[in-house]
Image (cartoon, rainbow over all chains, first blue to last red; front, side):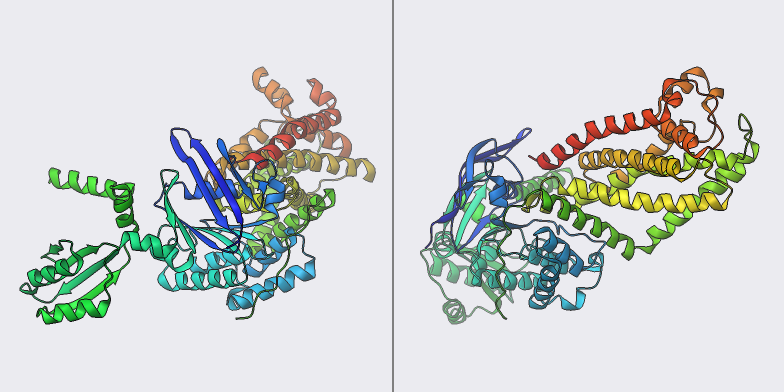
Length: 330
Length: 275
């Protein structure tokens, strides 16, 4: 593992009454992908904007390859690429013209900017759309074009702020493929995401962020081992419900939840219990459970937060509250 | 998949890059025009409509002090107005870039800090000059004439462009403050009345004193009066205040003041926005 190329120490930033960063510490080793995982409003974007020299922190310091992001912002801008949450493109010109314009602004010659634009469009499968105005692009195409715009030059460090939020699964897979290709080329990537499976798919290290601080970090395998997995079983008749609950409880050592209306039995297996899908299916079958669907999956971000902080993410809490007030009123 | 070639990020640039980056931004704005022919049509139709409404409809009932063709009186005002419209245009473009995040990408790039505002105002100066040429052609077709020779006519066009350029900077600053295209679009038309409280359509002599004072000191009036004087168009006679007695000096002065205030403000705002 290389030296940390991205370093943040005790970053603080306050916007009015909200403390977006409350002493965030972070290190990203050279040539690795770090996933910054957290719900909306956790401070992920603020952290990226500080590291990308767009925002000065109130306290703490951050450096890219040893250059301070405030004092040495110009040097830092030569080392970084940024793809933000919104596709930062000129919608009134074509995709190719966008790439050429940004290429010129990276001080490539006209000829070099043109050939680079062509190369990037070819490589990332946007050739057919290259000469259409960006405002005619789908959301996924915009994000991909935005992403490859940060690849016109090859900066050692790339910041990707929620690259797949709001995209359909197909576009998300395409973005993931793009990011994997980048990493294969040797880039260091700091990626923010709201999805544990995205961090799991792409990142070498994950830092879980909440209220402007890192509350857990480690390699995905370790983190998942701590967090365990979720098992959902959908049964085809009511008779199978208690039987399935009994089997899952026995296998995991944790009492299972039964949802009779949807005929689902759920259990959160602790990380110490290693269960494979065939084992679960075999045990259910032996007990005579008629199962329509058996799923072993990673915990969702909500479940991660529940486990790490003992409370749900703010959004879930708010929804729950609204639902509660709603039901009281009715 | 083939591996992408590695292109090293550029070394730090000097003043030369400010110019080149500025030119890239200018070219971007020209591309907008090419992809949006409607904008060019609007640019052509707007002066024709203005000359018909004001030159022929209202003008038919407005007598000029000292006599003369109303359209000869009007056209210098139209030039100044099209220059002043630059505020709204620039403001909208900058606010749009702010809203979509393009501005933020520029800021995170290793490019000259002042290139974006200078490039934007340079581009708008260029399109402003195109608009002025269209307006001049319309004027010549409807009876407006240059009476004092080419050098002073060029000086007058220079003043209109200088004033428009100063207002472009006001537009950059406003656009950076607004950060939202829709708001900018709604605020844009508010600049129109400001340009109308002036000597553009009628001499200020007939206005109530309080309004006349405002109109006389409106920078637009100075530009209009300077143009009338340099082109030799009617309406120069009734100078009632210092700016209208010395319109050329007043125009240069107003433009210099606007530039001195808004160039540093806009550049500072661009560099520190969000910080």
